[in-house]
Length: 110
Image (cartoon, rainbow, N blue to C red; front, side):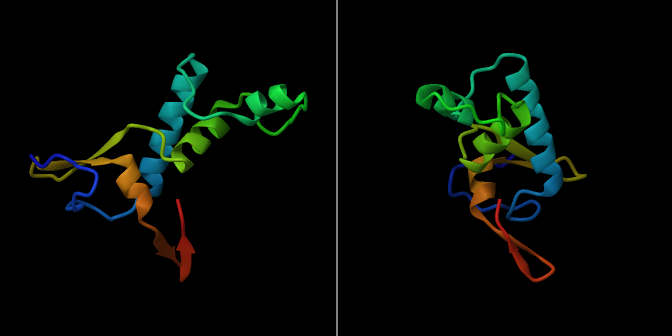
């Protein structure tokens, strides 16, 4: 089966991360964070404690932290795309985030 390298050609599915893959990754990472996994990005709460300023926006919300980790391409996650015949391709999340898509003529950036 094909395995993924950072600049490998995406053979299965679209070149960008789909909304379903994004939701699955976001939910899984938020669950990990809520269960005590180490955070890979500095949150606004940590910055606020350093500057003695309280920002009510984030305050340790696992979904916002997970979203920030995805946007900053910090997660070492592979997305496995499968075909009905059993073939699959593992694609690094960072390479899917490189590509932008179009929806209704407007550019979508992950």
